[in-house]
Length: 171
Image 1 (cartoon, one colour):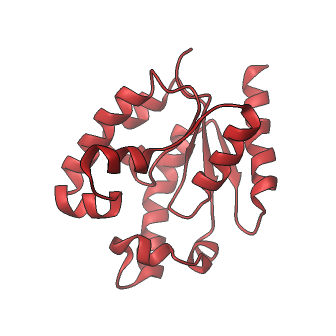
Image 2 (cartoon, rainbow, N blue to C red):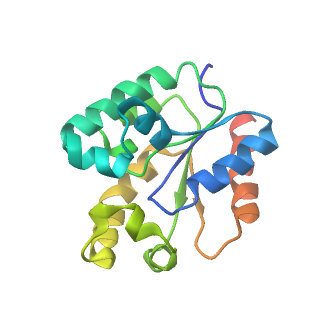
Image 3 (cartoon, rainbow, N blue to C red):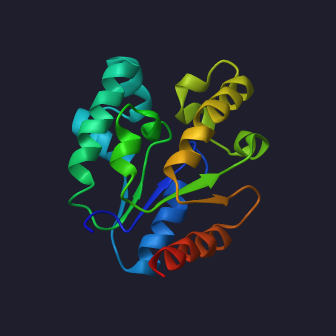
């Protein structure tokens, strides 16, 4: 099957980019951050783009761009935190190996720089993050073949678990 060897999903700050880069290096493939694709396409960071386009148009754009990326990109792809929740995206992800990097709220809140990076978390980051996790966790779980916890773990530990899911899927 064509497409990414691995797709990582999870909330902002769960480690998708960090673990994704490590996985790509270990597997000898390219790494791609879908938020960077969205920024390249529209000229604005994803957080600003949501505000500029509105959620519905932003999600349409995510789905269209992802539909073009999936058949041609064969490396490790880290999706934006909300990308799996866009209408039509779960169906696009179905044939691919998706891993959900799960992180606990308290761990996310300790991540430095997360709140300024995501203006939609203001003014109450704890409440917004809790709501975000509650809304998205069922979607992440549904689109993923496996869930790997990341809270309080080193990237190399998470990587080992993520790579183990690939080995299981090829048996």
